[in-house]
Amino acid sequence: MKDQFGIKESLNNLGLKDENPGSSTGQKWIDSKTEYFASMSPADGAVIGKVQVADEKTYETIIAQAQKAFETWRNVPAPQRGEIVREIGNALREKKADLGKLVSYEMGKSYQEGLGEVQEMIDICDFAVGLSRQLYGLTMHSERPGHRMYEQWHPLGIVGIISAFNFPVAVWSWNAALAWVCGDVCVWKPSEKAPLSGVACQLIAAEVFAKHNMPEGISCLINGDYKVGELLSHDKRVPLVSATGSTRMGKLVGKAVGERLGRSLLELGGNNAIIITENADMEIAIRGSLFGAVGTAGQRCTSTRRLIIHSSIYETVKTRLAAAYSKLVIGNPLDEKNHVGPVIDQAAVDMYLAAIEKAKAEGAKAVVDGGVLTGEGYESGCYVKPAIFEAENHYEIVQHETFAPILYLIKYDTIAEAIELQNGVPQGLSSAIMTLKMREAEAFLAVSGSDCGIANVNIGTSGAEIGGAFGGEKETGGGRESGSDAWKAYMRRQTNTINYSTALPLAQGIKFDI
Ligand code: UN1
Image (cartoon, rainbow, N blue to C red; front, side):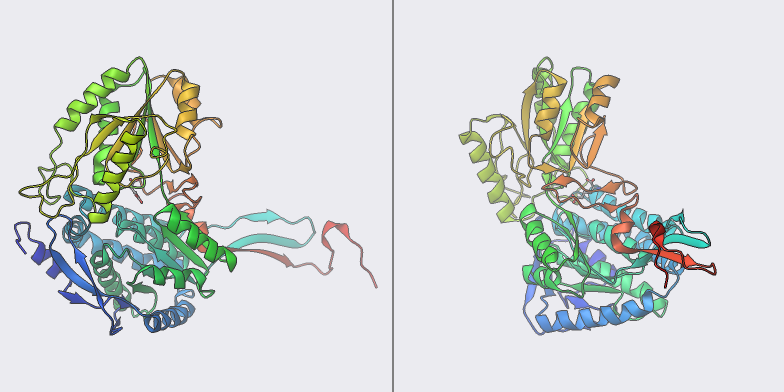
């Protein structure tokens, strides 16, 4: 492996080896005696390291230990649980550069975005620390004299976390940091495409739990393929499964968890659009659209896939975007002069090419044509050109989420039409409008406006802050992770009525005397 970016040192600092066990209950790693996943960097095609795949026996060991750990962890006062999460956040601060580099190298996002992802982890830890003193229940007035009523929140138990390659560490932390302060224990199945990032996080968290003499089982890791996801989804011992990934995967998880009346928290595909009105600040509109479309090589759930542009400025936006695209530098994500890195693997390249072919067959016209880059620096075969097409919203390919840097331009004439186009897809994650006109912005945010979980004004569709609830509607799955009151998904609510009177009046005034 060529090492101009100091990968070896970072892997070393993170405690990663060439061959790593894949599953652990904390500091105890389990040798499943099975095969290994090879983690291949899309940046240069090198094998970064190997991670062992779990078998069913390993799964059982982990769940049993997690169940046991829950009995201790749920009795640790929430602010003390918060203190441990604070230290995990501090450990992440120390490892930010190394972990950011690993994320960048293992999944292909730029180093800056890798650092940003670790910053999201630090931020959610801080948020969770505050939350650990704010798991508020309401009190209400009883209709009966001498009675008190309130509700309280208790932890659920084991939270299964299934995360995707594109945010291989942050999405775990959104779930885990909240779940831990809520008193839950976590079993995490990271993406098969970024297993080393999972191992690195587990090493960081486990050390903190061990330092506080906490039992094994509060932070568990299990590397495996879809079969592990199936085990978690069907397992009655796992009251909540939080899954981030494709709509196809989410439907399977939702169905399996629903069948046993468990809870699922789904954060699935997006097909996010920005409406650019004739009243937009053009500079902000272009810059916002550019980062939204090409950031993380178009592989965020929140990536901008459609621009819905007013016909009077359509040509201007098209020309300015094409000019901006021509300045994009594509290359190794660890080299900070590059704006765009590779897509995750060969399968992603194939999907990108198939989508372009389909778009063209349906009538789309290239503004900036796509293609796979070859030659020096592009040997991994995973570098593709961010592309722009003029298209119609109803094209099958436009209705579909392709996890690649392909942007469709769509024309509109009235704001009502623009909103209809924006909502006219099966997914409902993120949306945005670029306008300086208050009436347009408010129409977009009104009840008849955007139907998405996220609706921004003069900001692109990606790059949400952790403080807000994150997720979306329709085929995006309806779940909310991260900030606001998303913590409630990780707890069970209990209503308590206490009678401190000398009588036993029944509610609703019912008489039942003997
Ligand atoms: C995702 O793509 O699954 O809002 C998460 C954003 C990031 C998180 C994206 N903060 O783009």
